[in-house]
Structures are given as C-alpha cells and as structure tokens.
Length: 190
Length: 77
Image 1: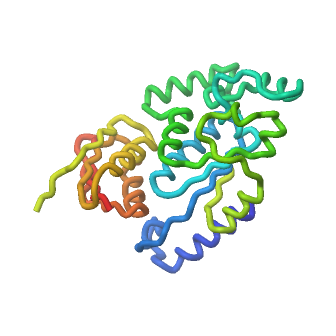
Image 2 (image 1 turned 90 degrees about the vertical axis):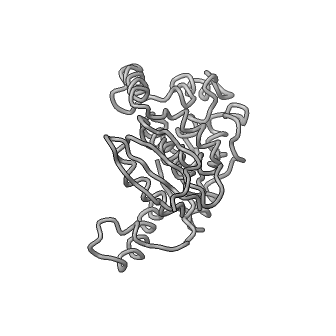
Image 3 (image 1 turned 30 degrees about the horizontal axis):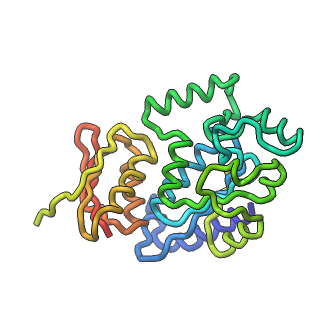
C-alpha cells in the first residue's frame, strides 16, 4: 500500500512543474520515455473487482507491458470454468464448493441475490456491448498480458497447475511481486 | 496530400475498453506511416484516444464527430 501512495506522490512531483493551469497535466509531457510496466495484484474474487482488473489489464496491454499476479480469491478466477470441486482435503474441497471457482461464476459483493445480480449484469453488458470479464481475460491473453499465479495460494487451496486455465505463467511468491514494484512497475491492488 | 486510409475499425456501439482494444489489434497489422480510421460512439473515446495516442506514439492526425459517431484517424508509429 505504501508503494502505491509513494508512486502516486512521485508521479505528481514529476508532473507538477510542467504546466500548472492545464486541466490534464498527465497528457502534457511530450517525449519518448518508455511507459512504466503495470502490475495488477488481482486479490479479490468478486465479479465487479475481477471485471475492473480485466478492463485495466486488457487496456494496459495495448499501451505497454502488463502483469497480473493472481492471489487468494483472485486466483479463483483463473481456475477453469468447468472445474466444480478443487482441492485435496475436505476443507479445500468444501471451500471450492462454497465459492464456485472460474471467471464465469463470480458473485457480486453487493446485490448478488442468489445470482440474480450477476445475471442482470451480464444481460446489461450484452445490451451495451461491454466485454465480459471472460472475454477481456481472453483478449488480455491474446495481447500478451502475463498472468502469474501465486504459489502459496495454489498450495493453500490445494490447486494444481492443471486446475488453472491454459497459458498461465510460472507460479511465484511475494518477493517477485515486490521486486517488480521496486524496479518501477506501477502497482494496482484490486 | 491526402493519404489513403489503410484500414477502418468499426467500433460503433462498443463500450470501453473495446474501441481501444480493437484499434490496438488493428494497428499491429499496419506498417509505419499507414493510416487507421476508427469509428466509435462511446463519448469517453474522445479523451481515451488522445491519451492512447500520446502514450503509444501513434499520432492522432484527425478527429471529427458526425451525428454521434466519433471518427479518429491514427498514423501508425
């Protein structure tokens, strides 16, 4: 969290002296500076948060390098949709039973109403031609977004690499994520 | 001299971020200097295309609006 606020402060500090009265100073800086890599820590499993993460990931992929670190509830979105029960022991199996894994089975944090909320969201997405989280995930993969599973979450939930969708990167831990931030990736915790 | 449009992306009716995503996918297939035309109806795309052009270096050479349809012409970097 400190990394986020520090990054934000640095960004404002750099842009501040450019043009004070301009409404959009971020767009004022000209030049060929390489854009920062984006690192999205996909932690949450709720539909609306996964959706936001996928919108940002696919868009960022059109502008530069993007990595998505999928951890805790966030990793559930990267389990194959057709997997119903995952895990090795009864607790892991029970956890997967209670919160069906897969990006197409995400629930809303508010107004879920036993699936009525997500159903209406998908209807509205179709009506307004907004891409669904699953579509955005596939677009992201096609555009080179690196989706990285968290090793500890895999272990804790008893998930295997085979439970995850195709094309996921090698699992890593927190140190890799911190190192990416220290090297200058712009971090987002969703 | 008026350069020819090499390709047109019809993103009319699509919501964020699809106009940008479709544009990025289409521009990959062009060669440097070629022009890409994008048609969109998402009002947010006006600011989005300006920002996208700035960061990616694909110049936004033309921008018009006609009856709720935004038309952008980008020159591939």
